[in-house]
Length: 89
Image 1 (tube, helix red, strand yellow):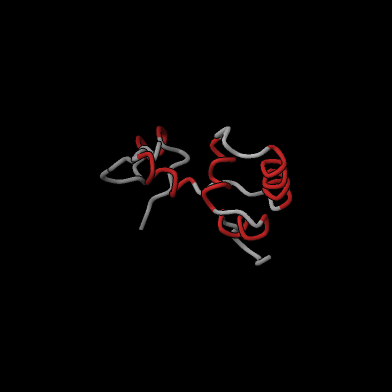
Image 2 (image 1 turned 90 degrees about the horizontal axis):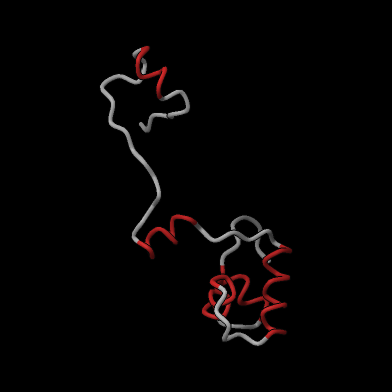
């Protein structure tokens, strides 16, 4: 298996199933045979696979991200309220 980011396509290839089957296991769809579900679950655990949150946000049309537009992040008032904010350049 490749190194780096593992995708559902990689999991599907190794489990010898379709990416749709891997997706059904991830979403908890009951239309997957128990032995196939176990095989996929084992691979997901083996590679510490986590679904891509950006890809999921595209599907659900929600990013669950809050953005702030500030005049000056270095101003003491804003620094007090937004300590953990990292400006995007």
